Length: 251
Image (tube, rainbow, N blue to C red; front, side, top):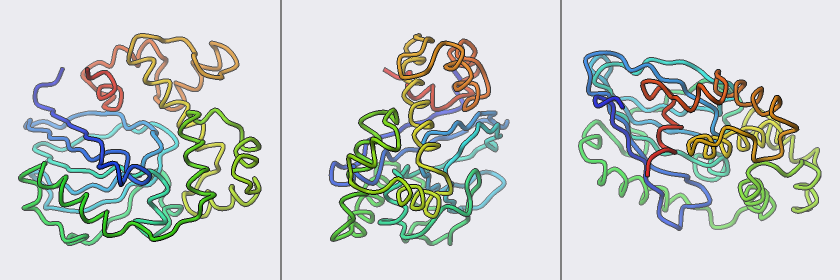
């Protein structure tokens, strides 16, 4: 456990559950960088952050498809809204296809936030929640809503064909939507969600496949593809490098 690195993630108000996965924060209070591995998790993160060397800034992270080692600068404080993909179109009203595995800088006054909002996480949580509530759509495409509900409820294990039949939307149209909106196919996104569901098992010490992997070899290959290491090394999580796994291991 790194006592100089603190993180906290909270579920959003129920009204926002279709669009927001959680609202959280992390703080590297050390004089040294914190080395971490960012793993694909199917979320779209909007960061409000600052550090000893960088002023307050706002960044939207696109979806990730492979692990990336990064250094969190000394005295970095970041508050983050983690969106589900449906929010990209309906809350952020944009496309993130152009920055897959990268990020896009937003205006520093985005949504009326500023450096002062990083002083109190509870106040930030409430302000962000209230802002998102004002952006909730009056109507949305029921096919898209049901599509994501099936994707999440199945942990990404349903085939594109099955999902297409469930929501009565052609596979071709679904993949066009995913590629134009998010920069990857539905199948690629489902594999990321299956990986994340597997992390929940690994966090509990279960390092064998419990989802629809072909066999143990396939399971290890997929875990390594998205985390950079085999399940046994991931479970060890030396120096809390894999923050997502650390969060899942919290009681």
